[in-house]
Length: 205
Length: 205
DNA sequence: CTCCGGCTCCCGGTTTTCAGGGATTTTAAT
DNA sequence: ATTAAAATCCCTGAAAACCGGGAGCCGGAG
Image 1: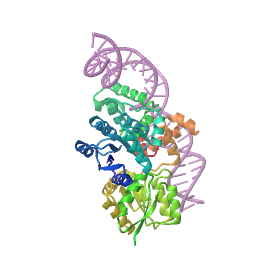
Image 2: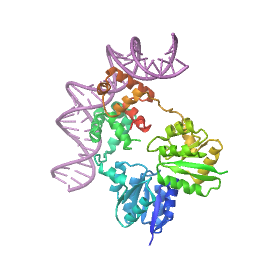
Image 3: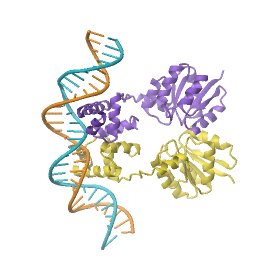
């Protein structure tokens, strides 16, 4: 029985590429594709594939969140993360949210089919680069509170503590405390270093 | 006579996707592909296609630079930028360096073939989103001097003016001047805002 | 109920940045 | 040789950030 594969990716060319790569494969059945999280979820309501290839950057929802949602609703669907980037933080969060594998978009046909084959049998597949990135596990993902995110965003916008305090209707010292906590969480020496890593981790737009 | 199309992109799946999209087209001849700037240049030394589809994010060289080099060596090769991102700065710099078009990776088959057709006849094609992004022409690309880049990098690393001064063997006031100039060039209120945009513009790693 | 995390607020003191000037020397291009 | 841009250096004063504490309030989990 062939493995049913569905793909969600907002880049039409990537969908085409994967379809073309998998077309010839005997054990794989093309289940369909979606270009957004919403239409992916809509499809899943009617029908569940065995393996779901999922881009991490979707227009309406992050792949991380979509993955969690999918695994919650349909635990039997195995998810493989798909991305151009080889960022530990992404890969890690993806796996934490129930993904079974992670493949980079420059993967070869062999890699992809092997990944699908392994994952459909309940195993885990990580591309070499991905597993390597996971081993570099020095930075665990920084978890911020609601308030800290707000403050961080405003700091990144160039506001001073004073201005932030006024905007959030709190005291300057409160903002300063949040700032201290942010510096601690990011293990940053100052705001410059903090913003740098925050932007790279995509915690600020 | 068919238009010869060559593609350079480090993502195998995108190459496959485009190949599959163009396969059926009558007027288009698949000239080959490369996964790095180096092998693209190697190919061009032997043979020149009519149209060169070029990813902006290459492993060994930025598409921006590759585009400039290609146009300098082989002005008759028309370049179409290819990217997942819709960032004005990229598009603009690509066009400044001689590209004839810019297509997003979620383009449809029609869009892509139209782009190739237009560009091969010496015209310009910008995807809707790209041309729209270009219209938002508020931010011209920030040009930094050698020294400013160094200082910016060190600021982003979290060093203070004092530390930077020691590292670069110059006076603190010099570093402060560079800092001021950076703030002015980025039109940033303070370092937080500066670093934010600098990272987003990929001027710091 | 108790404990913990998040949010709030405060103090005192030091360091750094920012906003204004102005000025000289190197370097590269015409 | 001239010129312009880059790089260097200096001053002052105000504003902001950073440091290392302490402390009360609340809501949810155990």
